[in-house]
Amino acid sequence: MFKRSEQDKRPPLQIFVDGVAVAARQGDTVSAALLASGCDARRSTAVSGAPRLPYCMMGVCFDCLVTIDGVGNRQGCLVPVAEGMQIEIQKGKREIGK
Image (cartoon, one colour):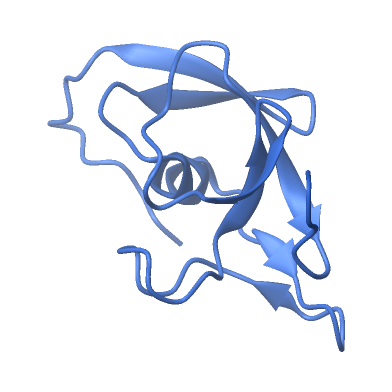
């Protein structure tokens, strides 16, 4: 659905999503990197289990919640990627203390 511009010459980085290596670019947010990689579903809702995608990309909607380096409930649209970052797709409701 989303595709990187061929003119994007920013340095590449490697992040890991649920243990799988994913290519990202320096300056990407987690959500932007995941969308560009084709990894669509970001989390699932607590009530119906419906898959969610980042919606606003500016920290308002909370549909991009992921666990980053063991810290849950992070808004992927606000966190820049870093080399080797470990990301887990968050399932269901937000968890306190994770």
